[in-house]
Length: 286
Image 1 (cartoon, helix red, strand yellow):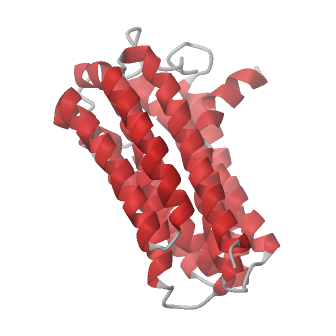
Image 2 (image 1 turned 180 degrees about the vertical axis):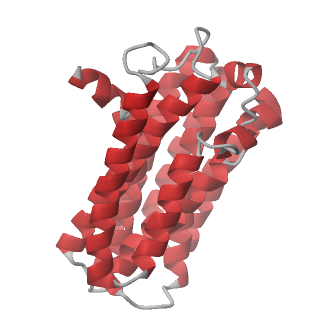
């Protein structure tokens, strides 16, 4: 049974939570303000929040029929009948509670803005596929990812440790780069699910743009991410993103259906690799 819950947490997507916190902490360390306990707290909170979102997404999509028999992505727990929607939502609330506890401690250490950022992220996590106006069903999933997995996670993790404002402009560009690469993940996911999402009225950006337009959009995300890394003066992740992102984009253009799961895994690995390259340049370059 534990395997079901682990799979429902979607571990292959968790680099989207790990990478921004790692980059934000490296930015703080480069400024001489790294605090390991706060960095670990940000990581724990981000992971709990993403798992809460994934659990809520599992329940929400199942109830709206988005994870039906024609789904080409990995099987989902609620849609497969392995877990009830009520149990999945309860698990989501538990993970959200854990994220809130971590956020409360971070707020005691660093101030009330942590509560504002965490509270907004928590609301967005549940509004992604739940409620009367789910973000993912209105084509707003992509800006949600850019905002919370890029700007909020990177800059929030950095600010918690440096506790200074304003933050350097280069940090904003680094946050944009991470967010754009995380958005590329959701773009591939939505290209893969385009037909089944359209069938149930899930108007993702991929559904709105169509097969060709969504692939052009995916390519643009990698180009924009490479440019953002360059504007942050982080040339190593910029080069990696430009080269490997280009290869990935080519693969997405040639791939359909279930085979896009491999592209999705590659995109997650690329996000993590670019983050590691940024950390290496920030901490090791003279």
